[in-house]
Image 1 (tube, rainbow, N blue to C red):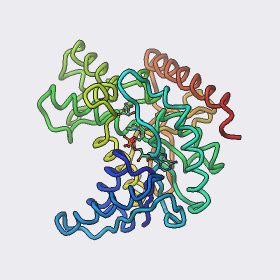
Image 2 (image 1 turned 90 degrees about the vertical axis):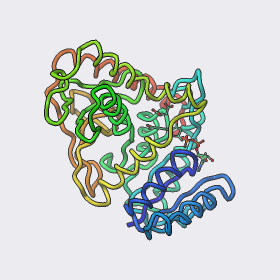
Image 3 (image 1 turned 60 degrees about the vertical axis):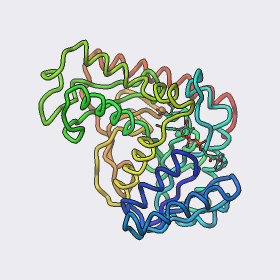
Image 4 (image 1 turned 90 degrees about the horizontal axis):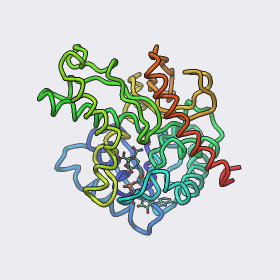
Length: 312
Ligand SMILES: NC(=O)c1ccc[n+]([C@@H]2O[C@H](COP(=O)([O-])OP(=O)(O)OC[C@H]3O[C@@H](n4cnc5c(N)ncnc54)[C@H](O)[C@@H]3O)[C@@H](O)[C@H]2O)c1
Ligand SMILES: O=C(O)C[C@H](O)C(=O)O
């Protein structure tokens, strides 16, 4: 299996490292526009192979997409990260052009690839890649929910002093402050979370999750990379190993949840064909209202992209 990661910065290099270390693909290509950057990162990752005992091969390329040819999966992480005081949506002006040109090259050299978008603003950059790639939306989707639920689960594990492995959760909506964690669908070792934690404490954790990206930006001066890189790699693994994992993924909705023509985070089955099924939960009125609010926010930014006329 061949996997390309575009953008050899913090998230892209971390993703490539996890893919290699876990032998998720035997051929990993890291590509960046900055001269020598991807080659350097790829070489550094490859030099961990005798220590970490794996044989997946990681190579780098400075903007030469012929090296990425016939990739099975491509992860797009190229673009600016936000700085303190910025919202993810503030990145649209720069990142839309980057995601568009990268997607054109990706699809030219790997016409059959499944494409996972990571660049922000996530839902709208996924929409941008979909408009550019002009392929079935089951093959173009975004990584956000795996990260957002990981944050939620890790905070719950800290609070309850239990293993994060035993916490299952679903989170829906856009990858922004309007994301929708769903306590009704959160369990700890099969026990509904609401039986283990006070409502106030749970609400605090939900709020922390919604602003989890911003919490890291404030601490680091740039955005997170360990959890995002690992989350993207976990999605790649589900595809290349045809695992049929159920993950919250930014997917193109055409009637699901009563919504049309919008990229939004929903639970899906992820396997060798990309998004193999969108799972429709029976949301209650409050949950539906939150999802609709999130969809309005995403639609607003999609319109900004449409008005920019970046993608024809
Ligand atoms: N979806 C998520 O949950 C999530 C999580 C973390 C970060 N992000 C986003 O991912 C993106 C990358 O974050 P980062 O921390 O890795 O940033 P970074 O600055 O460390 O890396 C970005 C890389 O993209 C490269 N790049 C820029 N234009 C390019 C082009 N045209 N072709 C190829 N490479 C190009 C840059 O040279 C740089 O190396 C940001 O937009 C960030 O907001 C999303
Ligand atoms: O917060 C950011 O800007 C990056 C990313 O979307 C995240 O949630 O970590």
